[in-house]
Image 1 (cartoon, helix red, strand yellow):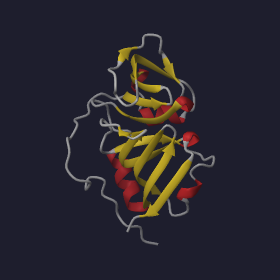
Image 2 (cartoon, one colour):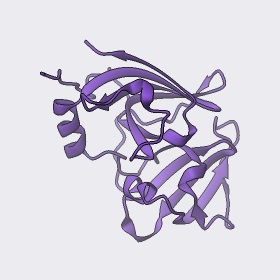
Image 3 (tube, one colour):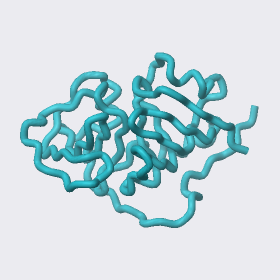
Length: 185
């Protein structure tokens, strides 16, 4: 079965962010936003898939919709992956999916336009799945805790989170409540 290629760079124009700091990420939770640095130079996706609390430095907290500025959170020394709904690189952080992985996935996976309800968030974008995977079964338990959504748009309530990266975010499967998917042509 031939799988059509998906080019995540073909999603219009926008500000190109130069990312330089490995491990700098933003986590969206039901309670708000956490901006922090991972300890030890581990990639965000790899750290989260260990399904254990991850140690962080320089944590800041604020509301998810950026209605107030981030404030230092010196008491936050670790983050539990199960508390995170959506994770994305900070403005100066490295992408959550490497270029090599994205390129390989786009050649051998099927692209779907998806909208995921991850209360209180709604995430829309492109999901790449193996031909044997059904997007409507994503709310069931799986081997991966987090799924990458390419060309994402993240909303909280009726507001779009304006600093969402253009390449990809990771969505926690255990927080997904509803999946709408259409195969891309």
